[in-house]
Amino acid sequence: MAYVITQRCCNDASCVADCPVDCIRPRPDEPGFATAEMLYIDPDTCIDCGACVDACPVDAVFAEDDLPDVLTGFADINAAYFRRHPLLPAADPVAPLRLPKDLGPLRVAIVGAGPAACYAAEELLRRCAAEIEIFDRLPTPWGLLRSGVAPDHGSTKAMTTRFEPVLGREAVGLHLNVEVGVHISHDELLAHHHAVLYAVGASGDRALDIPGEDLPGSHSATEFVAWYNGHPDYSDRAFDLSGPRAVIIGNGNVALDVARVLTMPPDLLEGRTDIAEHALTALRASGITEVVLIGRRGPLQAAYTGPEFLALGHLDGVDVVVEETDLDLDPGSRALLDDPAAEPSLRLKYSVAQQYSTSAGTPGHRRIVFRYLASPTALAGDGKVESVELVHNELTARDGRLRAEPTDRTETLTAGLVLRAVGYRGTAQPGLPFDPTRGVIPNEHGRVVGPDGAPVDRVYVTGWIKRGPQGVIGTNRVDAQETVEAILSDFAAGRLASPSGDRAALTELLDRRQPDRIDRDGWAAIDRAELAAGAAAGRPRVKLATRAALLAAACSPTTAAAAPAPAPASRT
Image (cartoon, rainbow, N blue to C red; front, top):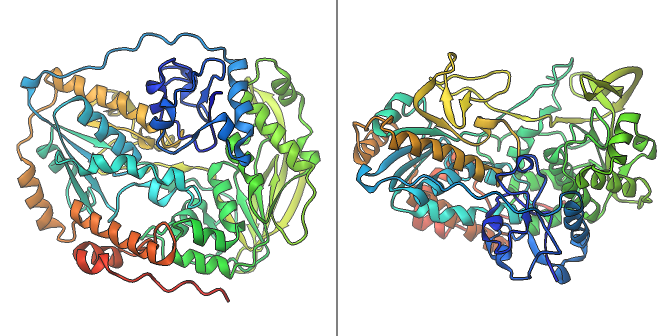
């Protein structure tokens, strides 16, 4: 019997290091790791020791005989990867740099408190005597783990338990509700630290740049995701869910998340997830019965991952619809699929789409409909969105790639809600260089570089602001290791000037500038309040979704811990 990695895989790669027979691929040092949809276990080499189960932070690994019915297909998915990529010995690992003890503690400021920041802090603490100060403009930590991961992906959200020990270390100072550039400047961070590491993610979104995009009823998926996850900057937003159809532009994993939330029975969301109370109330009154996802290219080029696409088929009360005509492949795509060397993930996407195309719908079910080879050209309506104008595309080979080219075929699709899910985008940070084309801070292996290509003194990046919005949460672990290696190398070489201010001076400065700063104890009080409210309501957690509520909980630990749960959302 072998162990099997399933849909929940976060690509953290902790399991790779712990496997005694080295049978998990791709490894972080392999070219395919950065783009891998998930990791895989070779069934012929696995010795059934269970080390990967203990190492996995999201409970994605199962013994083959214990796979739940909805995950049984992943045994074949794991095996198929190794038919395409036979297991070969890994290269000898490069020994990580270790700092001499006489260098003293390394003080690092980390801007951001999401997974990228936490992985970087963890790596610094593992490899040297570090004093770390973590800053975030929000009153809560965890970044997209809290405000971006879909609420029904509880195992992924549970990765916070992996990072809690990092924030609990005495060597780590936590400064929430503190905005760099407002409450403290970049230069002041440098004055109090050897290095400043930006792990601010990619909180912006990409625009469609089409007529009607600014009509009421047209929103970014980023905004909608933050709203249903209880992000305090978005809790007061309103979305028109009264119409029967919503259209999502884009078909990546975020688009799939949004489609699930719009179609899942609210009772399931309430009982199993930490979705925001205001979102639950709105979804109970929703009139949406169909969600259409628009992708500009074909089913083989869809941005979603195969495991997430496969999981849609197990939603209660929801039909997944793919038109058979959308699976007629152009010659270039057919050649990709028929190539014996084709990636198993490509065949998985297509075979799942075929299954959906032959499934009979169930009367009364909500529908998630996939439309391929189409692009929006305009949003139209009288004072609000009422329809989406589409152009049909065809794939043509150009510059060695298959590109979507518009045809003369058009279509109008009625919709009362349009959400664009065409990608996150990084935003510029005060005092730092920025690449507006890629939406990243320019860097070389994590070292920030200026317009002349020279390194910017003592400034580093990790996560999406470093590489763009690519990869999943666990991808940040390897990314952080690369950046930390650069910081340690520069520290050992004497390139990091000693700070002029210590930790006490920094705390005094922050308390003067931001009296509402939330420290570790304040966050612990917020966490207790949310968990207590969740327990009273029979839910994992009930989030406090406004800054006022979060600050009140942080400042009144005893009262917050005993606070009653909010009244259940009306079911009428």
